[in-house]
Amino acid sequence: MIAVSSELEVALTTGLWHAAMVFLRVGALVSLLPAFGSRSVPSRVKLGLAIAFSAVVAPAVPVIAAPVDVLALGGVAMSEVGIGLALGFGIRLFVLVLQTAGSIAAQATSLSQILGGAGVEPVPAMGFVLVVGGLALAVMTGLHVRAAMYLIASYDLFPFATIPDGRAISGWGVNQISQGFSLAFLMAAPFVIASTIYNLTLGVINRAMPQLMVAFVGAPVITLGGLFLLFASTPVMLSVWVDALNHFLQNPLDLAR
Image (cartoon, rainbow, N blue to C red; front, side, top):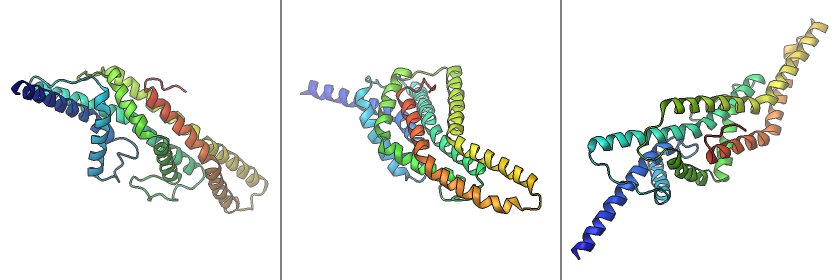
């Protein structure tokens, strides 16, 4: 009986430490996870989500033993939280891609003040619509499942208690930011092209008819054209965005499309 109790105590202690160490990485990532980690989500809900993700991830990773002392525990905790934040930043950047694409499109079509303060974060114009639509589409297509798989795969990329190489992490981050801006400009390209054609047309009309107030004539045209482009191109933009997000979650080291 004593031997069984001792084995049960060891098993419970090992399992508790294993779950706690997994929770450090998972909790840091969930705090930055799009939709689930938004500032509008209450802290208690985020805590419940982190515990739920930990319950999914913990059985799929190798057993993590308890640290030998307090100093080792502190080092492991800092390492796991840092890895979780880096992984969460990689996903969170896709929300910034939507915001940047919306800002470019809004500035190009003179719609930067519409819906400017509707969100928790100050998102100009079309960015709010794109963010809400993108997050809804990502959740509908299984963001939580892919995030759990992403966390499980992270233990192959960054084993437990491993301090990542600073140069590799910085290079990875810079490359991903570069790809994010490229994706944002690609999504907003129809608005930029329409704005260029609009301004060239106004310039030609102004040279041909200097007495005509082309700004008063052209303002309704660019406003209607911007709204029509938003209506027509949003499904394609969000489809491209969610494909890029899913590609990143499947292989975060391969950013090229």
